[in-house]
Figure 1 (tube, rainbow, N blue to C red):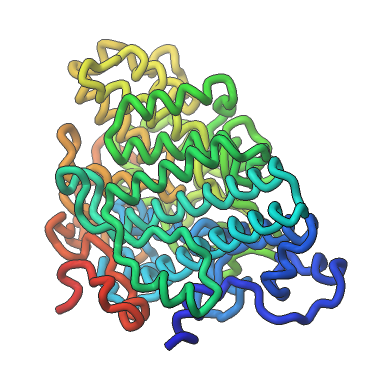
Figure 2 (tube, rainbow, N blue to C red):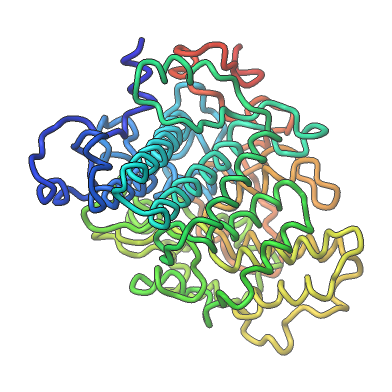
Length: 517
């Protein structure tokens, strides 16, 4: 039993004592074959250990048993692929994401099982990093400033991973008064001893409200502690940007605006909508805030890398549901062939990820366009809406993609009510972030919304290769058959089930309702 628990909680902890010198150990990228005690024994090894945490975020282990053998769960690729395939704006052309796409998963399906397992593997690695750095600080190996930077980065990754898991395994914040419904266990202790295993695994699920409080506390600590300024690393600004996402889900509109305003002047939208995805520029442009870096030797491989799945193997296409949405103007630059899209047999695919040889495209976790649209929505949803500022921010994002902003930009007369403005912002999000994994997040938070409610998971076009004629623009929304029925919000399949492997170890955790049939 203990070995099984260790497999789940500790599979990313370094094993063995094979390397004899610091130089040999540092030849391993990422570091994954030394003891925990060694890992925090010198400044260089501590830096390598932090790189190991990012490796766990970028690649994970999946079912390979190797710390570098995963499929990009959670932040390297899976958040994009699973987040889009749960929504209606893409079509799974093969059977690769069929369980996710159709909602036919169960408590043993790899798609959802490894979101949980690799998510908590990363969280545990973050916790071990925090504890190891504190130990190194106490021994005088590093100073307080360096320690704070590492701890802040680990808290950032711990926070965003818990938050991501919440959107799949728990109901949205507004599901109950005070968000008192079950969330997920919020792990804050690194587990690497029998005593820690015994004390940590029985801890119950936190409520959603408790999880949000802890996520925001970790992100605020990250904001105050991190000094690193690097798009491929957690940063002060990344923590601020992510708080706008969390507060948007919490429906605290004033806090979305407060946090987003902190980034005024720190970032700017690129001139063209495709610029943040240019391979040579995807970590150094003015818009990307936090992205996961990949290299030819460290990536989620053929079975998961973004360019492999979405371009090289064309396993997921843009859906005519969004492609034909009249909100997406026919001459919008985000439709330009060979830039953000490419065409095969009339079907439209994303061209945001292009390195089909070495799989080095960065995974865009959050960029400034999202912060601006988060703020735009918040301004329009205030009890006294500020539609002027909301419209300004919406146009900032939308206008750069318009063929003729002087005639096509929204104006104050475009929307009769603030509610209509909110709906336009939500439509813009679907267009701007297609194939960035944001659709499920919006579907989740808009359950029971007072302006643009979504009931459950929307209907989709049948899994397979749709005929190219379905993509012909005629100024009308898609009205053809869907094939994959909507899943009502009351249906148990709206949530992913807690993995059976987890419940076999700790049944007291409790399965999500309806999955015990």
